[in-house]
Structures are given as C-alpha cells and as structure tokens.
Length: 635
Image (cartoon, rainbow, N blue to C red; front, side, top):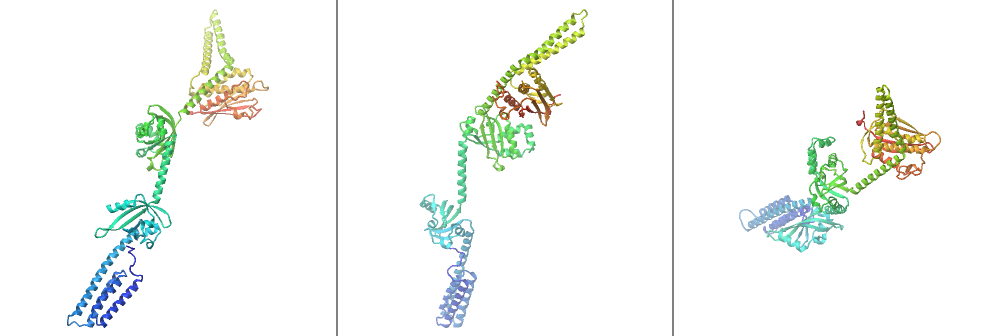
C-alpha cells in the first residue's frame, strides 16, 4: 500500500493518457474497418479503456467506454448489413460485452481506490505518526506527520524495514511483543526511536493487526504519539518530588502538610468577609472549633514527629486539633490571614504533645496564591523550648541584679532614709509633748490639744508610708503592673535622694508639665530608675567647684512621655558613650557598672527607651521615654 491520493501506474500526465487512449481506439477502429479481421479486433478497445482508467478520473473512463462502444457499432455497420445475423454480429456482441464488463470493473476499482485515497488523506490529517508495515516489517504507508516528525519522506520510508529505519528500542523482548500481537490483534507500549537527524524520541505506540478476507495476518498499522516532552517533564517532576521528600524527611525543622480546601469553602459561605471576619469569629467560637476540624493534616516529617512525641506520621492524619491547645489563639490569626489572601503567616504558640505536655514553638504557614491548591498548605515549626528557658533564666538573672542594685543603692542612702524616718518621729514627739502641756494647764485648751493630736496622726501616717515604700523597694517580688501618675513617682524619687543631694550641695530643679498622662508599669522599678539617674548625676558633680544643679523635666511628646535628667557636671568622654549602658562598665571608682544597664533594661521592659547625650565639660543629659495611654487617665 502506497500513498493512494496520488496518480498511479504512469509517469505521464492525464492529458497524455487521454490522447493515447483516443489514438489507440481510432487505430482499432481503422483496423476493424479496413482489414478482413471482421470485428474480432474490437476486443482491443478494452486496452484503450484501461489506459483511460489510469487518469484516475471517472469521467475519462465513461467517455472512453462510450467512444469504444460507438466505434464498435459504427465499424460493424460499415462492414456488414443488418439483413443476416451471422458470426460477425456475434463477435461484435462479444466485443461490446467485453467493453461493458471492463468498464464496470474499472469503475468499481476506481471507486475502491477513491475510498482508500480518502482514508489515506484522513490518516495524513492525524497529529500522530502513522505507518503501515507488512508481516516482514517493511513499510508500505507513511503519513505526513511521520514525515515531519521522523524526517524521512514517504518515498524514502516506503520499502524500508521499520525497526531498522527508526532504530526502535523496546522495553521488553521483540518476540514477546509479536506473540502478543498475533494473539490479541493489538499491542500498546512505550518505545524509543530515532529521527533522521539522530534525535531520540519517546513515543507511545499502538499496533493493530490487519487481516485479509481469509483472516490471515497481512500487515500491521502502527500509530505513534510523541511523548518526549511529557516524559521529560514527568521525570523532572519525579526528581523534584524526590528532592522535596529528602528535604522534608531530613529537615530538623518540623514540617506539617495540611489540606485547607474545606476551610476555603467554609469561609466563602460566611456572611462576614474582610475586616469583619475577626469580629465574626470572636462572636462565634463554635465556627472556630468547626474550622479547626476542617484543617486536615496530610503528612508530617520526622522532626515534627519527634517534637510531638509520636512514633510515626500516622498519628497525625486527622486535623490540627491534634496539635493545638484548647485556648490557642494563633489559629484564628492564621485563618484571617488565609481569608485575606496572604502568602505567609508567622506566629508563636504552644504545640500539644501526644503525652499532653506543651512545647513552645514558632511557626510559619505558606499559603498557595491559587484557591485550587489549598490542599497543599505547609507549616514550618521550630521548637523554642531552649530559647524560652534561656530567656526565663536571663530575666531571672536581671531581676537578681536589679534587686542587688536596689539593695546597694539603699545602703548608700541609709543616712537619708534614717533622716526621712527620724523627721516624722521627731515631729510626733514634739507634737505629743505640746499636747501634754496643753492638757496640764489649769484649764486645758482642748482645741489646741485636738490640733496637736491631728499633727501626731499625720506624722505617724507619713512615717508608715516611708517604711512601706522602703519595704517595697527592698522586697524581691514580681513586678507589679499598674496605672501610675508620673508626678507622684518623681516626687517620691526626689524625696529619697534629697538628703544625698543636699550632702553634696547639689540643687535639684523639678519641672513637670501640667496634666501629665498616666503610664502603666511597676512603681518601684520606675522609682529605682530615677533614683539611679539622680544619684549618678549628683556623684558626677561631687567635689567640683562652681554651681551644682540637676534639672529634672517631664513633658509629653506625641504618644510618649519624656523625662530628662540634666546635670552641670564634667560630662561623659566620647569614647565611653557607646559602652555606657554595657553591664559591668563603670567610670566611677568602686562602681559595679550595673546601674545604667539595669535602668535601660527596666525602661525597655516598660516599652520605653533610655538614651544619653553629652558634651565633655558641659554636663550629661539622660533622656527617658515611656508610652502613655489616655484611656487610663487618672482623676
């Protein structure tokens, strides 16, 4: 079988075939009329019809047959009359019958050839490579796609052995494939073939066995689909999956694969969207519990299994309730981020181990930008237990140091404290003696006695407050967070250092803006910061000639409350400024180097900032800022 849509059997054109067919018919007519062969030669008209049939045109066959019939009849009438029916007439009838039968057979063959040509054209329209080979493997048909893909034209391929031409490589033995083809009539598989240019193609082959009318195998129709790019992409995907799996299993960071497609549907069905979603979930905790059940865990890596105390990933193939505590709030934040289309979400929470213990963790969730990929949400988890323990130990150490610094400071201020306590005690004694004198008069002056007793009570309360403040200052207790009036803290701190400053002949000027807003924090710690700054300023000016002044100012700057402590001392050397707040760095003889470090830590723990500015010879200015809030305004 060859390409059936082309003219066959002659190298000349259709016009030439028509011409020679006509010449042959006329030659037969002349021989029939002019020679004594008496009609038998008319059978040769069949050759003229066959020649016309090679034009592959039905009209040419019909015209040639009609012309031959007409010439046969004309030759008979010219050579014989119609009076007697003899052997010439029978020979003429035989010739006409031969012409008719030949014409019928030629027309049938033309119709069959036309059908086959149409089928061949359909095969040429296919996007697959299609060729036909006989039982010996020789190619008999080669379609257009095969020409374009393999590089050989039909003329080059037809007559060649298919396996040799294409250098086909099979995944199994060729004999086994042929046996299966003969048994079932079909075979499908994947093979490798080479093009004319030498390129290697991977193709999906489908073979169909052809039989003749007797049921005997005569050929094989092969249909090949080029899957080279698809196979390469699949192999790349497999390699990528293998790399991902190796990283997934080898990572020391816990990784959880989750399917949030159910969450997407639940969120889309909610009446609240966007900024209102968080409020909706706060009002509907049942929805949050339901949503936690919709976040399905599909896989966890070995690091996460170890973190959660599990023996295998099978223990987690449920939902995130397996890992989150009852009062966890991080899931709501993640859900809002997911609904708002964010790509990443980070947070901190506690992972619940299978034995019930809680593990503090940092996590990052990666969401897909496409809603149809919500089944592939990745959560990366880091165990921060050791870091949390280190932070707790650091805070405890800082508290110890702060406590030690407070005790050391009170040791230096013991004289001032004794003076503060002795003052109200002396006043109580004086008032009591005065009251006794008023009572011992001949006529007791009860009004004066009542006034004196009032003075005694007031001074007693003052002494009690001083003692209470000192006990709180020395007490090693957790910081107390309360709403504080800065003016009161400044007043108490200045009272504590007044004796110390007076001894060094230091003048303290306090300037506070009216209606200062409150701050939230620990009264004792903030007092200690101001006391340390004031004592340091006084000591920096101790023994220096000239005026010694400390100016303490309190102002409001936007959302921050600022306190500055400025002295008129020698200032701080430029080389010392970068290290001034470092632990154990000091510029004083016998100093511990912890006071300013503790001050900065305390201020930062209150959400503020402590800084210093100084010009040598012009004093130093410490600037302290604390956040304030009008919602806690004091009466």
